[in-house]
Image 1 (cartoon, helix red, strand yellow):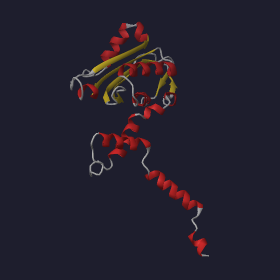
Image 2 (cartoon, one colour):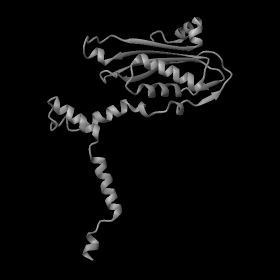
Image 3 (cartoon, one colour):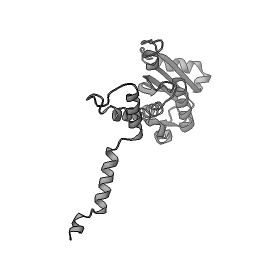
Image 4 (cartoon, helix red, strand yellow):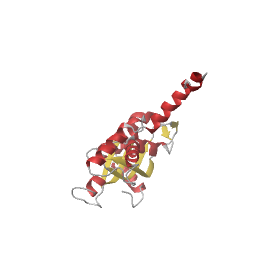
Length: 208
């Protein structure tokens, strides 16, 4: 009888393993802790105790776009509209792949549909998902434009991004006010300067 009372049930073992798994530091957390120790930080300090876990969560959030499928975000609707559509002032942040420091800013997106439009919220979702990974800003706007052209097949699209880069502000030249603007044009936007001018005129005056 005593042996039966002391015996742990399988479901209790499973629960204990799940609790242990949740409380056990993951590999990224251990790497951050090693980095902090290497830099001379005392992990027993009250301000550092939870830092490895917080930094691990931060970088998982900053790179969440690595596992996303753009095709799943772009729901389309049939439309007779064949003129310019612009979504402006879309906030984005990304990671410089050279230093793993952030850059952030605003993006503006325009397209001319060819029978299909996308839900308004889908364009910011696409941009933010594709930005949430290590990628240089030059490639980011190009990949967003190419992805949209491939999946939605509009007559053309334009992407304009202006960002401030921490790798320039915090190190090296330490130029805090520098910002970079990159533009990607596809389809009709490459063929018609008037369409590019219309796109730029639609943007807010203070647009980056």
